[in-house]
Image 1 (cartoon, one colour):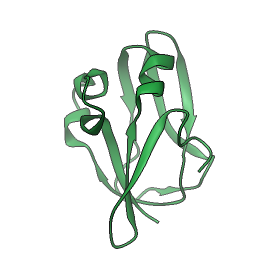
Image 2 (cartoon, rainbow, N blue to C red):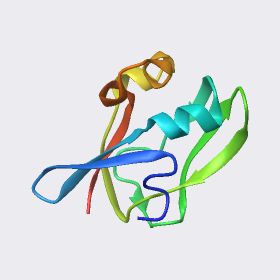
Image 3 (cartoon, one colour):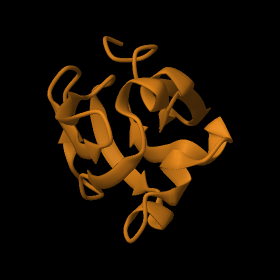
Length: 100
């Protein structure tokens, strides 16, 4: 998992699914996230392939996927606001769930 550890935490949740979220290092490197372009449910991700685009205080960048699989859930709170990504609680900074 190439980007795991650099920007993301990846946690197994159930039946081959993993939840992906922004870790403390990602918050530190990016600064406050102002915008995130999320993949749709059903999108096929490839490790190191296209994942998310972010506009943040310290960077505007595309970040590659830490895993391969199908997006099965997206954090609904991130559709209209990036507040969860800028919070102090790492577990609240989840982005999406992938079936690997």
